[in-house]
Each structure stands twice: as structure tokens, then as C-alpha cells.
Length: 215
Ligand SMILES: Cc1cc2nc3c(=O)[nH]c(=O)nc-3n(C[C@H](O)[C@H](O)[C@H](O)COP(=O)(O)O)c2cc1C
Image (cartoon, rainbow, N blue to C red; front, top):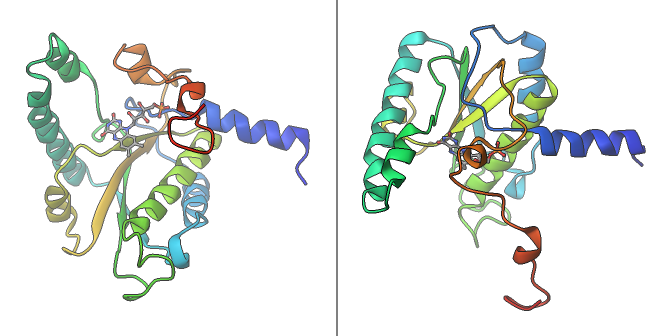
């Protein structure tokens, strides 16, 4: 069904995609933007509810306010590392978003009411609406990589701050702020790996046979 070349291309983008926090001011071509949004919209979703919306934030004033919300949260979270030797300082040195630099921030939202009260398959696990939205985000992230665009997922914020800034109704969940643009530095490894915050775990250690913990 797929040629070896096509298979290689898919795995190449999966391994190449990175979370990027440093952007150039260059604008994103309409076609690339259309392609990444269409890829997001073709993600799987529970009961095919398609709970997502995409708010395209280009206003400098709004981006400034979103960056403020993220930075406020970053400072608030630093308290969790207070008692770990050197970890707080390390945490505060990490760049966790590039909202002001990137020409576009896409706020991806999830509407839990879409499809009514009995969305097929969502009655048992309500958060499958958010999981569906995450699938859309991952599609968009991979498509951005193929388009030569850098993308960064920002989740450091209080949802209410983002709702207030972007006038999102109270029942809608702002799942992610995705910063998009070009970059002159697209690393091979996760930034958190290079900055010695975390390493990729060994896949073998995560695999069990039939029952939890059995090898
Ligand atoms: C749900 C989710 C939330 C994330 N939130 C942030 C964030 O707020 N700030 C940030 O810099 N990176 C964020 N990231 C990116 C991760 O740090 C990154 O994916 C991870 O370090 C692995 O690096 P890679 O994406 O380059 O493979 C988030 C990623 C996910 C999946």
C-alpha cells in the first residue's frame, strides 16, 4: 500500500519533529497554514465529535498578554522545585515558550458539549474529547514539520487567563497554545534532553508482556 520511500518519509518526520521555542519573524505562507490546519482536522476523534477549534492569534497585543500568562505560570511553578538542589534555578533558566517571537500562535480548544450529551464512546471516558484534541495537535505538529515550520506547545498557563484574553466561553477548554513560525535552529534532540533536564527512556523498560510489570 505504501512504497518504502513513503514509509521512510513518515518515520523521518516522526523522528525529526521537535518542540521549538525560538522563532524568526518571517510570516507563514497561506498554503502551509492551510495544510497544517487541514491535517489537524483529519485527526481521529471519539464518536467523530471533532471537538476542536483553532483561534489564530496574530495580534501583538494579544500575544503579549498570552506571553504574560505563560510567564506568570512559569514563575508560579518554580516553587515546586524549591527543595530540589539546583533544580529551581535550572527550571527558571529553561525557555518554555516563544509566543512573542513567533508570528502566529494557534490556540487549540476543545468543546466538550459538541455532539450533545451522548457522543458515541465518550460516556465511559469523558476526557476522550481532550485526547481527540491532542490527536489533532499532533497531526498539526507533524504537518508543520513537513512544511519546514517550527512549532512549540505551550501549556504553562491558567486556563481562565487564556479564556479572558481570547474571549473564550467558560465551557470551552483552551487545550494548547501552539506557536508557529520559521526557526534558524531546529535541533536533532529534545531541548529538555540537551539541557540535561530529562532523557528519553529506554523503550524496552516500558514494555510488558500480557500483565503489568511482566517481561
Ligand atoms: C501536552 C504537552 C504540553 C507541553 N507543554 C510545554 C510547555 O508549556 N512549554 C514547553 O516549552 N514545552 C512544552 N511541551 C513540549 C515538551 O517539552 C516536548 O515535547 C518534550 O520535551 C520532548 O521534546 P520534543 O517535542 O522536541 O520531542 C509540551 C508537550 C506536550 C505534549
